[in-house]
Length: 396
Image (cartoon, rainbow, N blue to C red; front, side, top):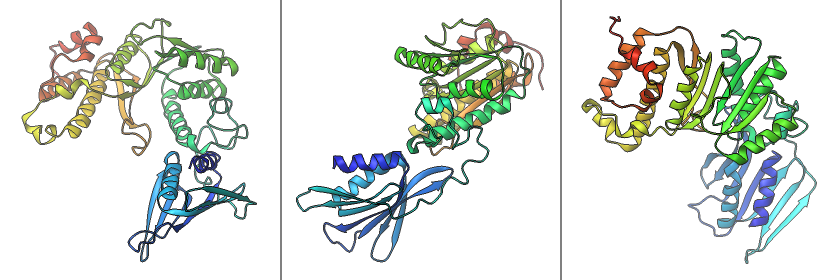
């Protein structure tokens, strides 16, 4: 089956599939499907492969992510069928399986045309499909003609969603002669490169961006890409969040999927710098799972999966509340669709005032409700937060 999988991966990667039919069942069974057809479909601006299972008196549909579709086809051929015909933009392929399991693949000239699924997914994107973008080409998201690789389309959407958020917040703050940005836990840095491209190449701003990560090989790779792209004011440094002191003044802090309390370290640094903008997508919040307690909430807390999700929401609510105490205007927004990852909440914070006394009262009452003490976020913010929480002024 390896040669079938190789062919399927190539077809999916090139986004060339038009239609496919799996037929000639190995064992006839009226209770089972007699054939399966496949075709690409557009769902919420993302391409999936739709599998249609044909039974005697009904059909059933299942939409499968591009990355998993090859596995499903191979499984179906291996288990149920002796033949498959795949119509692509480049060729028609007939796959034949003998009774002994021998595979034969016949290639013929293409006989079908691809239906355009992209007409309604290009609008409003800050980086358009069909126009080559240097960093996306270099990172393997699109080819040199601007065509997005199928397996990278979710990443392409995520990048554009991120830039939409950046476009909105950047218009709400004053941009000086230079604008310093730090991206904590940058990883392979798709979004860091996107940020530089948007702010420098599109908006023409004078920015300095530093990406920070603990993986040395990732940092070396990103610095090489930045050098290849001539992104002179984009640097990547190997190190952790707590120890970074590369800038005296930081205007914007980005922290995407920093694990557990590393998010709190990043938020503390951002507030210490009086950063104008904070964009944070927390990940893997474990601290409060064993801490949140309230007898009234037992119907939720007694179920581990619900308690885990609830503790994550409580954690992010506390983080947002702390930022409000520190004088930030905060919003919780959806970063990417829930169908792609449950870790999709972004805390978006913009510096406004010195202290929000109403937020202090809300914070204290919220902690009392959940019986929370000795929170990590309070330890990393230190006296700067403690002194504000000890304010005895009456607040409405």
